Length: 220
Length: 220
DNA sequence: TAAATTAGTTAGGCTAATCTAACAATATAT
DNA sequence: ATATATTGTTAGATTAGCCTAACTAATTTA
Image 1 (tube, helix red, strand yellow):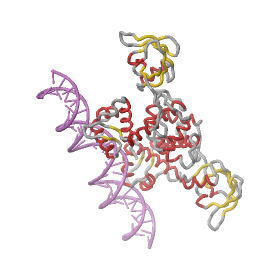
Image 2 (cartoon, rainbow over the protein chains, first blue to last red):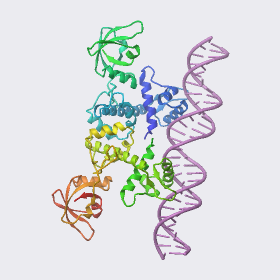
Image 3 (cartoon, each protein chain N blue to C red):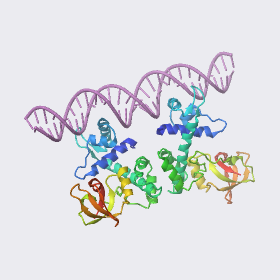
Image 4 (cartoon, rainbow over the protein chains, first blue to last red):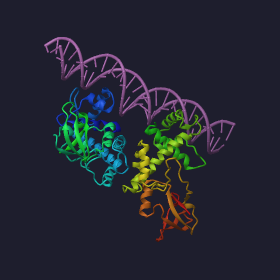
């Protein structure tokens, strides 16, 4: 049985390692920053997780999840995303509110609960942010994600996920009436500041920043 | 903000003090036994809760919840019973399975979550065991509960709640097809062992033990 | 490549919640 | 009313998760 805290470390490690496929390991400082603790604390916990066979790591070396560690991490991710979906779809939570409550709900221990919840939600494949939900075997759909900033002018694309899940960004999206599935047309890229003129769901064109275009995943 | 553990102490105190109206206080040993800790641990926590103004108590004296302590306890009870209702009604959990998962869910911190959940469940007044669910103001319906063992022979009554919530009892009830609302007719009380012959929802009469008749609340 | 910077570890301490063992107060029974 | 039993408290130790300060290893830069 994993503690609340151990689960958070595994989830962080999973998140950080899946961020770029090329670098499937994380650093102590990076982890600590992500979890809001000091590096010394992370070192302690890593030793403990290593003892338990959940991560592989040597002093000053790379930190990697073991198969079991990854499996556990995915189980938590699954719960997190199912709960987000529940809050969004059934309880009318907004896009930017679901995360912090799901952070708590993901630690509830009950295999029956998560499976029944999944059934109740009709086996969703994606959470409200467009991220894939692992099934009970830990498998999840692989989606080729492209940043909005990488789409060539003139092309049309569909929003499939957010890269940035901060409240500020999610609230801005809501204001722009952009959600998962919204169709965007790239009108032009302004060379001066790399900002982009886009058309949202066929309405009038408007300008968004480079930072914005770098925070949204779309598919062509 | 209360810790997970503090919440459990408040809930225990509320439970023990509402058990008999005549004795609205609990003892250290009683509390400790209920929570599965040693009396010394309970003493420590009581001092802490007193510091925080949640219980009133002096060394070797009676333990009572303050108004604020009671309020907090009721809020937890409300969450517990709403989650039980959710699990039972929406996720097809059985009567005897809801409690242990609700024990975890009741500690989730989000005012919005509990209110939205209540709305989603259509403002239920009673949980699956027949216990009243406090509303957002902490009020709950007062129900006059009579034990099955106190009903006179020949009379008819309706099951309104269970006194014993153990798995063994709940599973037995399920087997007998007794649930909240089931109508029971008392045929006779056997003097020898105080067992009772009852008719369940109009079907054939059968004998149940004194212990059984002492574990079920009915209304006339 | 040597110095400076960054990343990571160790040692020692703190707090919350638990324990055991010993003790003190209260209640009960002859 | 005193002895016994029950109930409750204190003191001191333990563990998990966190901290700071001081250190060491690895990496980057001049």
